Length: 232
Image (tube, rainbow, N blue to C red):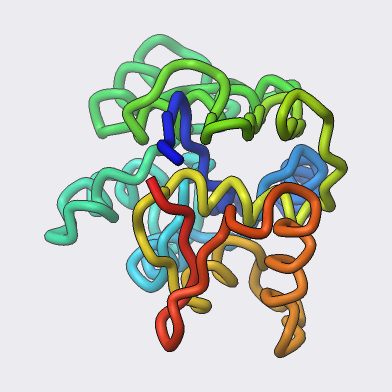
């Protein structure tokens, strides 16, 4: 079976926001929209998190303690690790002058939103950023008879709708994005669970089993001693 990737979307977002009420609301909203969201409250912690683990994109405030948002962004873009340095960044701030927007874009931001904002628009802009970073533009990911639509949070198999849990959807999305590559347990769990979430020892295997049962037993291949993959 061949894989046609029209859009890939990894689901893990880092939020760097010092307003506790707003940060908590963004986390809840993005998780409801299907993302995995982790949150730190200062620029230094944000940069450290990005250097420690892979994220799909960053939602970045500008007025942060310890290290400003612009300084964090400049340091991120200057990292030697090219993959981390290119992580898409969306600035989310109350600063709305043209000078602020120019400064943010010139520092390396990929998008700029002004508070107050709509959570649905934020989620849509993040999906667009992740699509562009993956080299895609169309709003679906296809693999033979399987179609996954990230925006609609919908999956069809051979034309019929497939009912997936949020974890199953995120797992399938990650495997399809990386079709042809073996992903380890650690990589897959990082895409499914946010910081502090308890992961049962057999949770990944249960999700894999459910996906095979709901689609095809041959869709996901087990590479013993390494991990899982969907073949191209």
